[in-house]
Length: 251
Length: 269
Image (cartoon, rainbow over all chains, first blue to last red; front, side, top):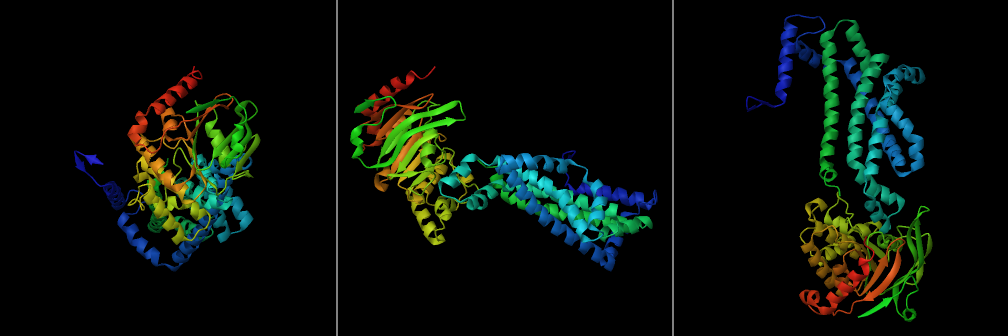
């Protein structure tokens, strides 16, 4: 960003918003908006609280398990769709429907099906993120130059070798992009899902805070979630960058 | 120079006695039900020689090469390698691709050793072999580079080294130089001939360049298009002992090019 020819680091815009927030909070404009400094103070207290820690741990655990399942399922579905026309016509429609459907509406149904525990959170994550991973993997498989698989076959690769030594790596840039999209969707899913269900883990904390007008705590929790999503997403971004050199130079 | 003109007839009878690395019998290929790519091709590829499939686009030369490689299935007919019928890819044949088909995420060393990696050769053995052939194609010092760090000509040298490293009897080359610039191409042709001279490989080479075919080949198979048939087989008798400059100025070389050109001209609209 350039203002009057002076380079301004991107963090600066964040600082402006934080300042605005602080000023608005100090002026006591709205009861839902406490000053930023109060939120930050609360953030540290929140992190130390036992109920937060157990809720965060439960959410995090479910998130990781759910992502693990969606990555495996998504890549498998994507490869099936990419390598067989029949699988594509059978699965393609469903994957596209799920990838674009407003899944949040399904969360209460999931709660009925899977109860009020960790399973519901895991299923929510899987439901939100699998389809985009499948679609991106499919795009990646379609992108593979035919001569690369001919090369594998001509040098005697078995089906397994072709998949694990050639096709998977050739589709990896798209797969990683899909995982990152899936991750973002899963965070959304977990937040929306937990707010809707709001009887387990962080969702319950959210509910308690907003019901009791504890807005310092509420915002602190939101910030924690933002940071969590950002960290995950940049971890994948870093991985993506490592493989980018060949994504851009594929021939 | 002897020119044997024949249209879709079996190749001359005296090849019975000759040692052929690849024989193609009555190969016919349809794509779908209406595209007739190849019509009853019979061909012998003598061991230790370089045979070029030459013809205008649409004559099915790449199709024929991929059928020999086992990458495409013929609609009818057989491919014999070392006297045995084959139906898929095999270790006695190695392919060099027009677009190189290198693994972009692997170093030159791993790319060259990839054929050996697929047959589960121990790492030390395949790396030693790979290093040997990297050196043979003039790429030593580039072992740890990635394909995108190399020029087009160097990438194809990697493709060639990979094909040599699996120690196949016959190299199948699909327009290997069409994606590299003219200077690189000439240098590459010369290097290829040198390399083949002491590796004693048989080569089946597809090209659409008449000069290239005449320069590198012991036997040129001219194909005519729609459907692909054998138009004629030419054996340019040019001494391989002369220098590249002399060959390119040689009268037989130039006459052969002219003759093929006048033959192929009629297929152009």
